[in-house]
Amino acid sequence: MPPPLTVAVAQTTPVPADVEANVRDHARTVQRAGASGARLCVFPELSLTGYELAAIAKAPGLMAVTSDDGRLDPIRDACSATGVTALVGAPLRTPKGLQLATLVIGPTGDHGDSYGKMHLHGAERDIFVPGREHRILELDGWRLGLAVCYDAAVPEHADEVHAAGADAYVVSALYCAGEEHRLAEQTSRAAALGMWVVLAQFVGTTGPFQAIGRSGVWQPGGATASQLTDSLPGLAIVRLAR
Image: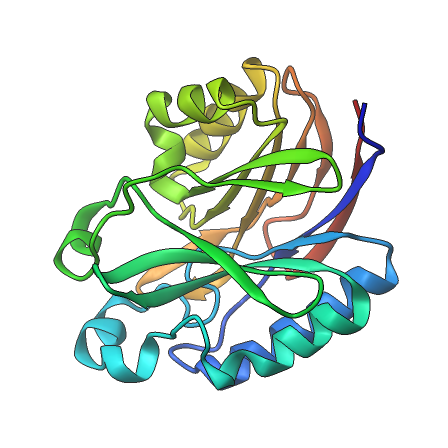
């Protein structure tokens, strides 16, 4: 039985299409998470750019990052200083094309891996190539299945992550005004399988959307462990235990 795992859920309002400014904010957030005892800090979908699809399509060379991108050094340094693993949302250049990805920046500051969103939605399909494989992150004896937003709307995604042995379903997302039902349905679906659900999303305006906040953590079965408000950025710290 693994020891409890303390996670930090970052609810942010991104600076539109400004990777460097958002990197600085991420680094500060990782420092706060580490000071609170967290071992994992989860950020929303496309957290380094905001959900700025038009800007990404217009200037992918500027908006997208690479696995060894020097612009990410402040986050790497924060992870190395705190021992926190950060899950960061970004457009990622890969040999297969541009992916809407979650970057895994490890506790020594290394970029260990990434997960490419498998189920693209709407205009994302014109910009990104879908990921083809699930990513199960192993951390302190826990198995964490990664998902990005619309992945969680496809029941088979959570089913397959659960079948792969995940203890928690970790979702980086954007839910907009009018989509409150989606947030509730998709967290409860994964929780009903017996997984913890960790969900980070934006609050405020990003791209053309008004995000509804309410990031949080749900226990296996669906009970709320912690949930942020619908109006302010914040950091939820939760101890996962089995």
